[in-house]
Image 1 (cartoon, rainbow, N blue to C red):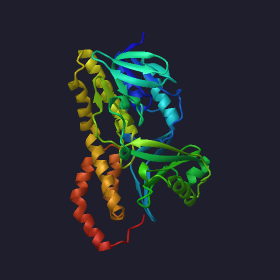
Image 2: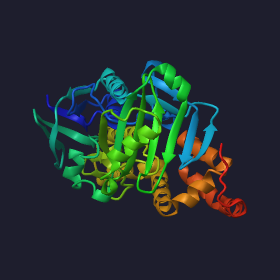
Image 3: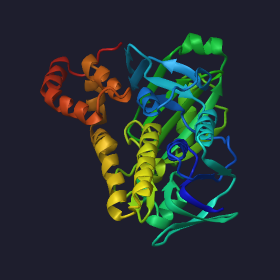
Image 4: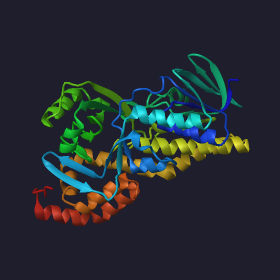
Length: 391
């Protein structure tokens, strides 16, 4: 009764996707989440078109609160607006979106045990034991999709280092749809300020605007005040509930697999350190983990080679881009003013970067293209000096 082919811990986008794909292929699948589904989830709720394409089904229109084709990038008082031909960001409420993905997994035959917390995971020779606060289970394979403080990760490798953890603060500011249309319409706005504040965003949704900011945990002491000040500057109500959450930026610092175990999404550290995007890599890694579980179960091969193959295919699919994002972030720390002012002067560079967000271009290809374009951009910077063109 308590024996499964696959147990998935965590019912976010990574876990729900893994459970759905496993169940589709007739694997006896259990999906566990510590919260009652649907559950509240503090998040910016920006689903890029690349993340949407990673799903193999259409997202219902009622789940999408706003489709955005335009993005505004601001650095201090300099602003640049770009517009793509098709929407590249779909703004969603994570509570509803995650519940929808979980329902899809259950429809395919996965069994859901919500409001049940994983306590520990132990890999044996021929199975994995999962103990929760309610029961004990065994499975051929366990997929860890339980976020930054993953119990599966903790039992496998001990968790993330502090320098891998970034703090994100978010707030939802009530605003009438009429006012949102007047002030934002379909415009996603990203602000870059001083080096210490990191970045901030404004995402117009339905009946409210999502605002937030992110930074490394070690620099987070004054972040609440900074976010409130940011809201005041933007003429938005700062007397709202501010919530925080953590995102892990690991980039294959440690293995994302073990004996009969795979880590996905945030539990694996699969987050873009530059943009903060995680849903795309959660969905992609969730699918790849499920495909690996199917292959292992069908063949009866649970060797290390099989599970290392999961890590290898994750790296070849999106790992290089995550490492490129980390390099961009590190370079930006020490050259923020020069890079942003130079980039905001070059329409072609920004438009091409937005196509990486849309999934039309790998980030590493964009970085390679920028390297070749650097002499031209440097020449422009020397000629025009600090007079950044405003749009």
